[in-house]
Image (cartoon, rainbow, N blue to C red; front, side, top):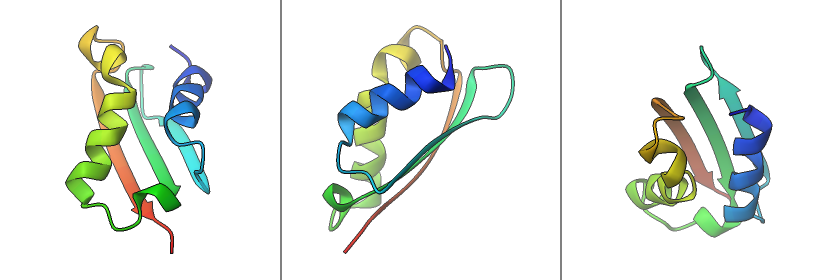
Length: 76
């Protein structure tokens, strides 16, 4: 799956994102995502990461994404 398709899924999950990037770290199935959004402000880091995992759950379940690195933060 392309990084653009993953980006589109994350845009749906985080429509308020100030920063949203998807980086292919090798082979198309090792992905790093970075999300900065006001909706993540005041949310525990673990819960921020759960939101990203939820948005990409189908791709994680079927093995399309083998490794996922997540960097998130809220904005004030």
